[in-house]
Length: 167
Image (cartoon, rainbow, N blue to C red; front, top):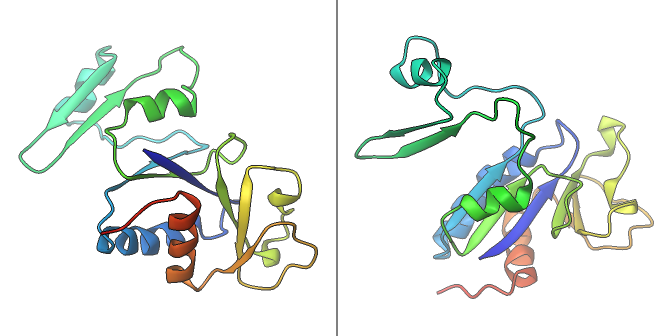
């Protein structure tokens, strides 16, 4: 399974880019999954639902299943957040696993950078950033700069970098 990441500061457009890239990869015949890192507390469940009540009662894991999908929720309680490697190990193998966030983990990443946000360029400090996608030119880059609006070009870059073959 090939792994490729998308890193950048909040508001840079990581999710927007991924939601455009995923259909492109799928249309090329690739099976794609994603892992998204959240820096805040989140809940995909809500009070009153059976699964929520199971977790509140103390269950460590709750799996919800239907004929269309299933979801596994794991409560960490007082355990530390799992590493990216531990999370990847739980994923079903696919052709391409896209990682959103985990910007300081050591895997190949594309940085989404918008200078208008006033945040520093991660690529200057992170050797795992293999290219930068931006809405403007960035002088002095030591990695390729991709046009943030060129979704097909970014898809081609990822496919080539991951040495994927498409049907």
